[in-house]
Amino acid sequence: MAEAITVGEILFEFRGRFTDRTEYGFPLRDLLAGKSPPPGGARVDVSAEGALQGPRLTGTFKAVDYLHFRGDSLAEVHVHMAIATEDGESIAVELLGIFRPTQEPRMFETRTGITFLTASPKYEWLNRAHGVGVTGIDPSGRELHGRVYAV
Image 1: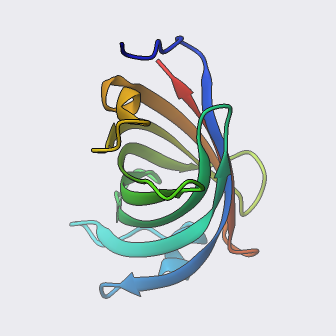
Image 2: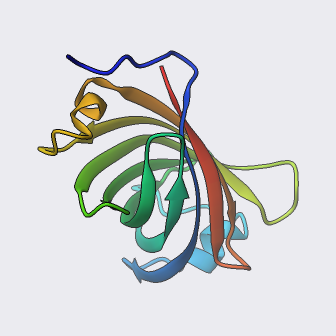
C-alpha cells in the first residue's frame, strides 16, 4: 500500500555549501552585484552539496543549478540533485523555478517546483509527490538553506 502524502507536510530541510561554478562569458559576481546580463541572458552552472533532514527522509545531496539570468533581475532555476539517504538509497530530484534578490543586501532566494524519481521501494512514495521549495542563498558565505514542502 502506498504511503499517504499530506499537503503542506515538510518533506525535508536542507543546508549546504556551493562547491564550484562554471561561467559562460559573463561573471557571476557581476550578475549578483546587479549588473544586467547581455541581451540574450547569461548562464552560470553552480554546484552545491550538503545535508538534509526530514520526518521520513534524511541524507546528503549533491546538486547542479543551471542558472539562466534574464534581463529583469531574475534568473531561471533548473537544478538536478542526487540524494543519498542515510540508509543507502538514491533519489533523483529536479527543481524548476525563479532566483531573485531579497530585501536584504547581497541575499537571494529561490522558489521552486520539485519532482522526485527513485526505484527504491522504501521511498517510492516520493515518485507521486510534488514539492515546493524555498531556499535562502548567501553568495558571500557560499551557503544555502531551505525547506521542501509537499503539495
